[in-house]
Length: 165
Image 1 (cartoon, helix red, strand yellow):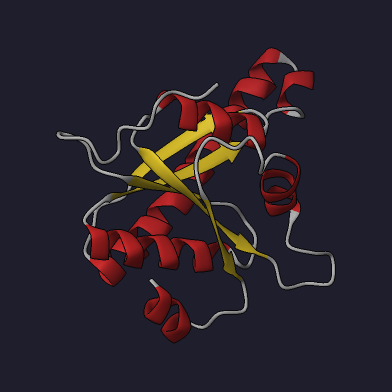
Image 2 (cartoon, one colour; image 1 turned 60 degrees about the vertical axis):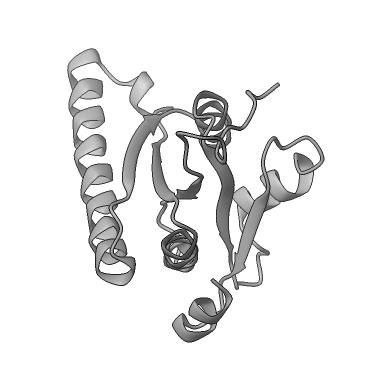
């Protein structure tokens, strides 16, 4: 059971959570969330999850090196998107890096941060379907998910997203 949402209570601001990954449509979710947050006066939280399953099977020194490199790469990716958000919407996003299984880490972060009001995902445009995260969270877990999901179609142009956000 997730904590009570407090995003709109006095002293709180709503946060839109965006998952930053390597999918081609990720920038669609970031753009939508940044534009929407700029309009409503909330905050943007960008999460990058490092999956560590392969690292845990390595020797300790190698695993530590792999983990450090993964954190550096995650921070660089988040900073690249943060620069885009600053230029696009004039807001400073909060960036978080976590290790583990993506869906579990998303749920944990939502449970820990009572200001997260919406999870923004972008749907893939390929023949494989909307993508594993959208399929898992919007499909199997949608009836019990603790916050609303905003799914941005991956084919939308910048102008179309701006008009909707």
